[in-house]
Image (cartoon, rainbow, N blue to C red; front, side, top):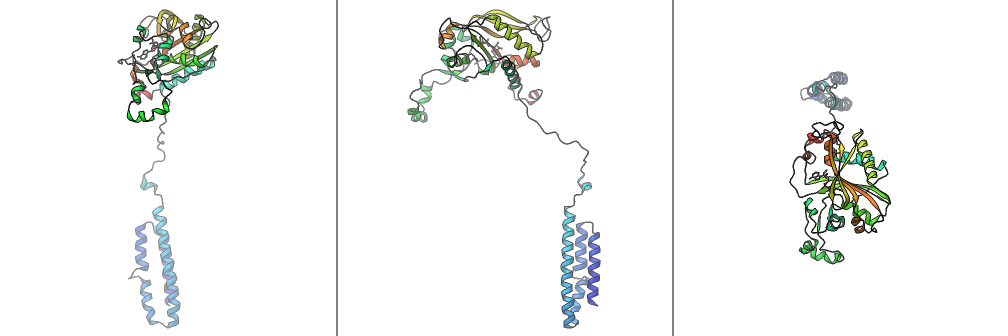
Length: 361
Ligand code: FA5
């Protein structure tokens, strides 16, 4: 009799647990079927009145049913708490996913890569030189002796002489590792990429054609077209019979490829100690093609940079015999070129770190 009651309770419990929809209902069922006032516990109380044999049988059955109901309640509780309730979460699967933010190259890096691609396609090699330079490679070897007024054209950031640095206590202790160096050489932040001309020629023999893009520094106040830290781009072509015509052709090819339109070159007399003759060169205006507009102040031409035939004194300083080779060199500002290409009105944008500017490229 008690056995049947237990089996009936078990079936009722299984059915009820099956139908339960949330954790609260499960807790209610636990009280209803196994709680102190439940029928099940009532049956267990009646066990004291039955025979020893029935007590044993009913007791065993009651235990296993209790475990069964408890396990069932536990499993159902788990399954209910882990069930994903899309309604409750209010997830709208039709909303477009958030865009991943992607990094990209700085506009100047892009310009530099473009320039390098064009020149390597014309058989040029890319050369490099130090930004912290000695006076010899930045000035003396480029035919600008110490008292030469041309040095004033490029205001210089001088660095502490190495002998001063060596006097500091830590470095004095290390000095014995360093005894071969001329610690009195004046060092500076290079004022142009022309130092690479000397660095390259000291190690290579003509014929060659190189370009040298890089960062340079000038101790001057900034405005919309001047920075104290900017980038230049040097070209140097040396051989037996290099002439101004070669320069004009290469320059015309490069600028036409860079601006993706036919560009004319114009040269005007100028002066640089490291070139003879020297000239400034202009390109036909990239906006009006030479007709005259506000971008070129109605001139039809845009100033690009300086150039010239390498001065023989420079070849000699680099270790070549005088009169044996000829070459041309040029140097221009990369920021200024980028400003022309992308119509940027202020050079200071490049290093401002302003993402609204950087993200446009
Ligand atoms: C020179 O630096 C020469 N080394 C260029 C050269 C190389 C001439 C080889 C001949 C042969 P200059 O000081 O004019 O020249 O500078 C060259 C270019 O750098 C300028 O035409 C301009 O485009 C850019 N530039 C000069 N000063 C600044 C500045 N403060 N901010 C941004 N760009 C500048």
